[in-house]
Length: 169
Image 1 (cartoon, rainbow, N blue to C red):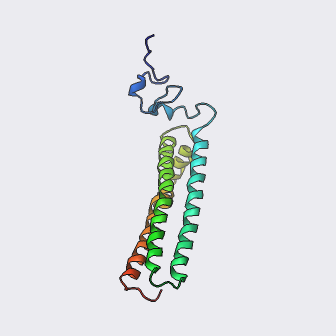
Image 2 (tube, rainbow, N blue to C red):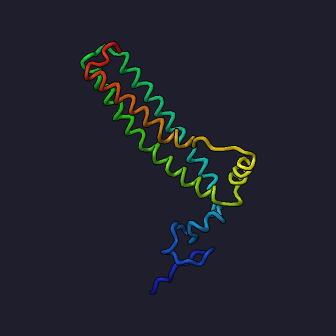
């Protein structure tokens, strides 16, 4: 039995040429034209990924707060730097799922913003026409910059305590 060549139902390219392989054989370029494939839409996926990213970020901030408090509030001067180093490592491990959720969210948003008929794109175009300019992308701050700064902060405090530069913490 010979396997048939799978063709994108929108643009007619072969399955292997398409970037996104899904059950309806719609490539990445055509997906922006038809965002509702099956029961689950990209809008629902965007909402799910945003919620997932924010929940993970909130737990990350709670962990950062607890580790920072534990590092500064303990009386074990010999092990104080180890608490900060272990905390930085623990936060690094907590950052990996946040990083991954942010990557997925940015991919979904890129597809949605490239669709001319999506509500988010229409609103974005209206804001752009009224002079609104992006200063920073919030998902990048939540997913990349703030966690990196928290880990860097704990690492620097750990080094300062380890080399006795910071003694009175």
